Image 1 (spheres, rainbow, N blue to C red):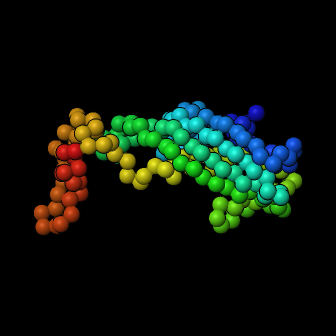
Image 2 (image 1 turned 180 degrees about the vertical axis):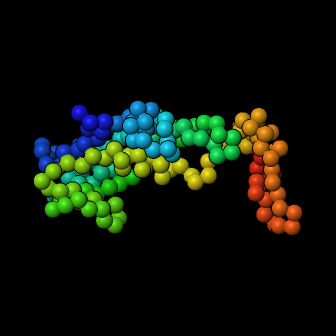
Length: 167
């Protein structure tokens, strides 16, 4: 069995109108996905798949926390994940990703593996800039950074904003 076989959903066998699935994205999941953005976490996923005349509507609810690295002090920080997402999956001749989160899966295969989609839903919740709340950064690193602040004399732009480091 592959690393992500638990995330493989059969679209052809045992057609029930509504199916529900529960997943736990844990440290092993994030390690297996091999992405640098999120390497640890614990996120619960509830998935409802509704078959509407051969078109499958996937409704996801994700709730938990991931550990990410603070851009300022490089310590890990806990970041909450709470989101919903929707995918529409159709059977067709070949795999295709269309607009509005519509995925076409080859009918001869008859399944979709949602592991990467789950990871993307988590990753999209993380802001581009991730820093600890004011006063929560590693104080030793903040003090070290203050010693190496470079500013331009006649320029309006600081390379590192002193006020951010004081937070």
